[in-house]
Image (cartoon, rainbow, N blue to C red; front, side, top):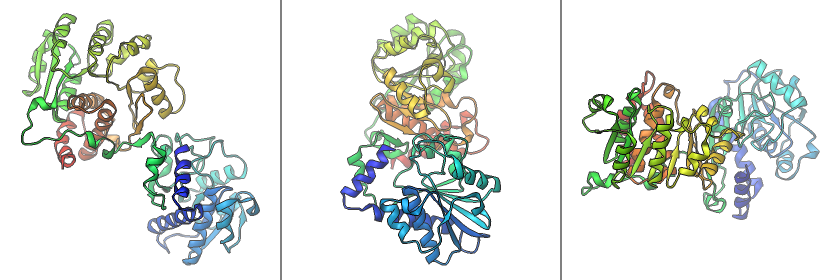
Length: 483
C-alpha cells in the first residue's frame, strides 16, 4: 500500500488536492453503481456504510450524489461524525441527510449496500459492530458495491483479516488495482473490478517508480522480437530441451510451445530408447540422440544453443540435478521446471549456488515448498523472497501466479482462466519461456510474457482445452502483438 500513499502524495505535489481526489472517487463509485443497478431496479434503499477514515469520506460523497440524483439513500457511520478528519470531514459536512450509527438493523429495507467501511490499508481484523454488520450482509445475501476493496481484505495480499468479509458484486478502486484484487482469496470476493481514473496524473508513476506490475503486454512488449523482411532463423535463437525416456509428452509439449512462440530453432536431446517418439512428434523439431552427461557436455560446447530447458518429464534424481548444474554452468539463459526443481529438494543451496546466468524457476506450490521451506507470508512475499534468495526469476504458478525478479520487480498474472487446470499446461509454459529467452528477452520479461501468452491462449480456446491445444492458439495472438 506504500505505493498508493506515495501516489496520493505525488498527486498533491502536482497540484491535485485530496478533497478533489475524494470527490472524484465518490463520483466514480456513483457512476459504477448507476451502470450496474439503474435507477428503479433496486428493491429497497441504497445503504451507504461509511468507516472512520478516507474510505468513509468516499462513501459520504456517494451518498450525497445519490440523494441529489433522486435515489432513496440512507447512511450509516462507524464512529462519530465529529471524529472524522481532513478530506473525510470536509465531505461529511456536505451531506445533509441523517447519519445513523452503524448496526445490523440498518439493513432492514436495504436493497443494495455500498461498503465504504475500510479500504485497502486495513491492518487488523474487523471486530464489533462492523463485523456483525458485515456478517448480516452475507447472511441476507444483499448485493454489495465495495469501495476500494471489500471490507475485511488486506490490500497488499488479498488476505482475509479475521473471519468476516462481505463479498462484493462490484468493486471500484482508483488509479491502479491493488495486489489484493488479483491474489486469492481476495480476488473471489471482489466481483467485477472497476479501475477508475480520479485525476491522479500518470506522471506520478515515474515519481513513485513502482516495483509491482500487472502482467500485461506493456510490461514486456518493448522486448518483443520483431521480424523483418531480412530476418532469418538464426536471428531468433536456438533452444535446447532435454527429454526423458518415459514421460515423453511433457518435453514434446514444451518443444512445440517453443517453436510456436517463435524460437528460430528448437532441438531436443533424448535417450536412444525414446528417440523415435520424439522424432515423430514434429518435423520442425531437431531431435538429438543422447542426453547422458558426455553427450550433454559435447552439445553445450556449441554456443548457438542460447536458451536451455530442463525438467519436463525428465525424472527426479541425481542425474537430473547434475544435468541441471551442467546447463547452469554455461551462464546461458536457463529454465528449470518440474523434475529439475524436485531433484534439488533437500539441497536448494546446491541449486542456487549453481546459477551463473539468467535463470527462471517455475515451481508450483508443492515444488516451491520443497525448495524454499522456510519462506512464509502471502504468495507475493514468498515469491519475492525466493527470487532474492535464489538469484533467479521465480514464477510461482497458480491461478494467481506471481513472477518475481531478484532486483525486486514483480508482476501479478490476471489472465489465467480455469481452463488451464489440466495436465501439461505447465510444460507448455516452460516451453514458451525458453522460446522467448532464445529470442533475446530478458529472464523477467520472458517469464511474464510466457505466462500472459499461456492465459491468452487458454482464453481463446475456452472450455474443453487440453494442453496440446495451447501452442496452436499462439499464431493469432502473436500476430496481434506483432502489429
